Amino acid sequence: MLGGGAHPPNSIEQLIKEVRSMDVEGVEKCIEAGVRVNDPINTTGQTVLDLYVIEHAAMIEHALQVTGTPKEATLHFEHLEEAAFKVMKTLVDAGAVLSGSSSMMKRGFKQDGT
Image 1 (cartoon, rainbow, N blue to C red):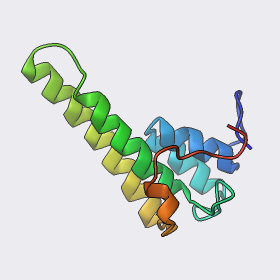
Image 2 (image 1 turned 180 degrees about the vertical axis):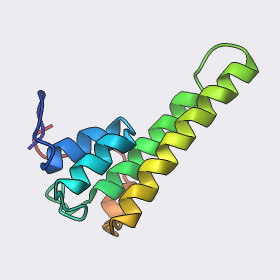
Image 3 (image 1 turned 45 degrees about the vertical axis):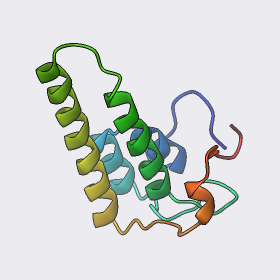
Image 4 (image 1 turned 90 degrees about the vertical axis):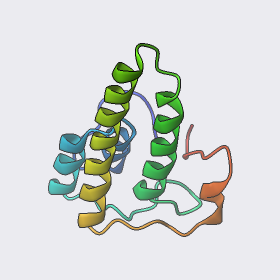
């Protein structure tokens, strides 16, 4: 289902790419192009909001690894969190919901074809 390369803005694959990069403008374009935010992104029925949770958690983990002064690290984290919040808010405002699948909480969250 997911591979490299560009995807049309009206594809779930492009929305997945935008969520992974926490690109709110890209997420907005996908939604405006008609991508349905609650379509399953894998065979377990998970949604892009499930993916958002996983990506956000990984982003927080990464923020703890940032080098530089404490102030620089904090500013970097603040920028990451602002972007993540905007993406989450955009998804939720478009009606996105978590799948409720307990498999989301397990390690090894995978998408079809990866």
